Image (cartoon, rainbow, N blue to C red):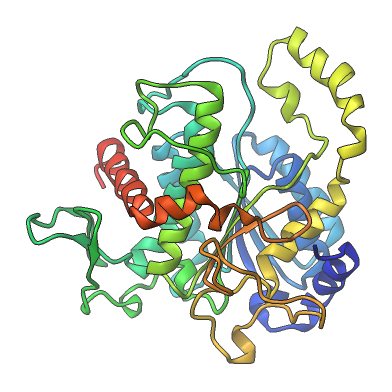
Amino acid sequence: MVAISLVRSSNESLRNLPPHLSSPTAVFTGATQGIGLATLRQLAIHTVTPTCYIVGRSEAKVQEIIDELKELNARGTYVFVKGEVALLESVDECCAKIKGMLGEGKALDLLYMSQGFLTLGGRNETKEGIDTLLSLRYYSRLRFVYNLLVSAALIPPILTPSSSPKPLACGRYSQVYACSLHSTRIDPTLTRQTSSQPLLSLAPYPHVVSVLAGGKENTINEDDLDLKHNYGVLTSAHHGTTMSSLAFEHLARQNPAVAFVHIYPGYVRTNILQSGFSWPVAFFFKYLLQPLLTFLEIPLADVGDRQLFHATSARYPPLSSSSAPEAQGAPLPQTVQVAEGIDGKKGSGAYLATQDSDVAPSGTGKLMTGYRERGVSEKVWTHTLEMFEKVRGS
């Protein structure tokens, strides 16, 4: 556990640190309410001149948030990006807008994702044929990662001698290939210097943060990863969580200059327990269940503090974190150490963070160890690329 006092001390130091921490550029999805908004507020409070791109559906609602953020930090730049993040098409449009507004050669320090809702209903597909809830929990989040990371970092292709490469991304950045699950090879012609786009891999200390249920992994159906045929409420939750952790572990290995943090925030009082239900169920949650859970509740401001800590602290470094002071996270107090990654190795680039900024033990448990030994993380990422190709053509 990292004491909240140490978390706040770390955050308060950001103003006096290099520009990637004192004046970061960040993309927020799902930050129009709840945990995402609390994190956005803390970022505005504790940094000097942040630039924040806020993805949302309602311009009026985001404008209210921007007005509040300007009161917290008038020197910051806060930009509304209209998008329906359950749709991969809309994710692509949002990323294109962000790249255009940022301009050439600019780095992205933080991608922070917390979109989603709860429901007891069955599978509800978007027009793209993906379950809405699973898209919000997994596919749309990984599409943001793909768009803001892969084009420059050029995630290494996955090839086998028996398979012929199939291009999954191409254009000014050359090509990315993915074919099978066992061996990897990096094309030496694919270098991040070829990109002038505002991408995570260009930043000194970039972080991808996904707020969902890191540490709560469970068994997934490897033959039906998108749950087209075996959908269930709990199954969907398990797939979104476990696939996120597996994909992050894979991406951290292939992109050692970027840190990936999958977070379980604990019980936080937001309107998520009412937003996806009919009024009788929402009434039950709000007036009967929530009062009983008060003793478990974590104050929203504390959660926002911890989320900023997860995104900026030296506790969660990329695998190949630079030793240069200008490329480090916020310095650690003497009592806090670099976290163990999902694979149990200290500082390995992909992390499962708990509600008190500790390390979830599930990464080295029987389930995840078995998945790791059988190459399931690669299988999940290959499936993800195949879904992207099916829906978007690349």
